[in-house]
Image (cartoon, rainbow, N blue to C red; front, side):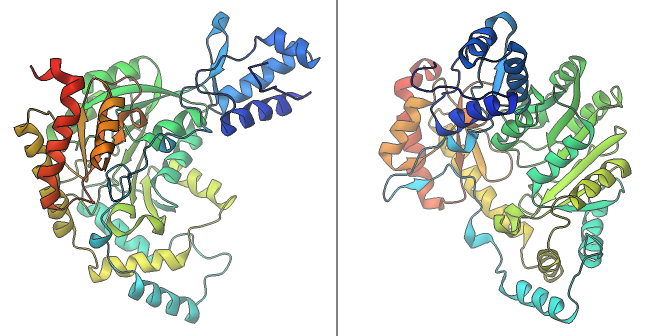
Length: 443
């Protein structure tokens, strides 16, 4: 059955676990059809309803998809095979432009901040029953949100942006609900949505953010939630402009029951103002991560939103991890208070590399996008050939399959490892890698 892999189990949970193990191990490949219900039930000697329950569980977990009489098959991007696995290893001596990591040279030292936080913990240990948010950290976070015009609301602290988004989605949605997501968009988010049993509805983006008419269409098709990246959109670098924000607010105001989630992970690394959508709908949340500006290993983000949403997130958090370490919260507060990271300097550094690369590619007839943040998006007709040719030239680019639902193919180039001296060479190699496969595009 299914080649050499045999699905096992007597109960629905055992059958579902067997299929999920096959997907996770690579024995069941993306797109592979599963046996019809009655056929598998006969093979296992169980009731067809047992197999149906197992398939429902797998669908809700984001492992398989069902298409009525056409049967069930493993998802092209199953939850057990995350998009981050769709990558290429850089050659020896090459440059890895695929990871999306910040430039370590632009991250502040954590030594002093952690020492100060440890000293505070020694003098006043945080014990059970303490507030989940450190008061000084919360005050500084609220001050920064107020300065950016984010509507007032309670605060929560989560273990990064994705943790916050997952918790917010889980507070309001149920398996089967649809979520409007950017396309192309953040690969981890595109994995998370089906892993929660939710249905992603793609919304195309341009340099100013999600297209209003496309968002309206997704909401009209039943999307109960919408997720928007405020700035430094991954992978295109889009940033919501003032005009686009007004247009999006108009669309959202006509659907007041929509759960709106804004991801402002670019806070601290971009020099474009925030144009928040917060408060346009009755249920909303805005999350800010410290990963790009202060270091991914801090695993810390600030979440604000309407009272019900934040209260639900905090309540569920108390039943799991309890809280995010005050050692980390106090360390980040110290980084903020002392100005350890200079947002203007960081934004200028990424901006200079990004602009130089976009300009160099444009001069060679290669269209590219990169309005903010640390990524440049290069549209192509085929991803496989250019990725392979760039590898041969010493560059590891991220294939667009990691970021797309239905949008055209592309390559993501992260500029953080580049020096200005690298850019002309990279632009030459990108142009050379594309032309054999893309001749019709540039003629």
